[in-house]
Image 1 (cartoon, rainbow, N blue to C red):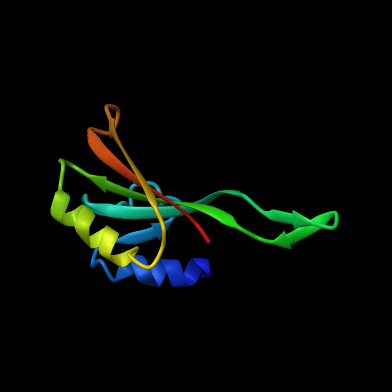
Image 2 (cartoon, rainbow, N blue to C red):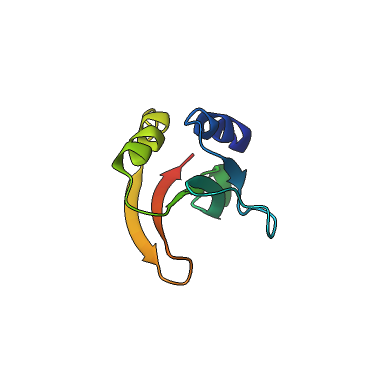
Length: 103
């Protein structure tokens, strides 16, 4: 799966989606999604990269806990294996629901 394909998959939620971050002062109202390649977890063989594997973070930001919004994201990611964590960002006064996937 390419980053463009992942972006299209995430857009199917109906939520605003961007890669990495919104330009300053252009972020839409919550909820919205940001996604980014956090690092690679490549598979090596014969002294080189045999298979490229990107570790991607899909970040859902919400003002309050919104299980129905999380369900939208999880349905969009249903063809992938993901791990989920939740954090409240005091400085931003919002929740960050983090989905980690490898593609």
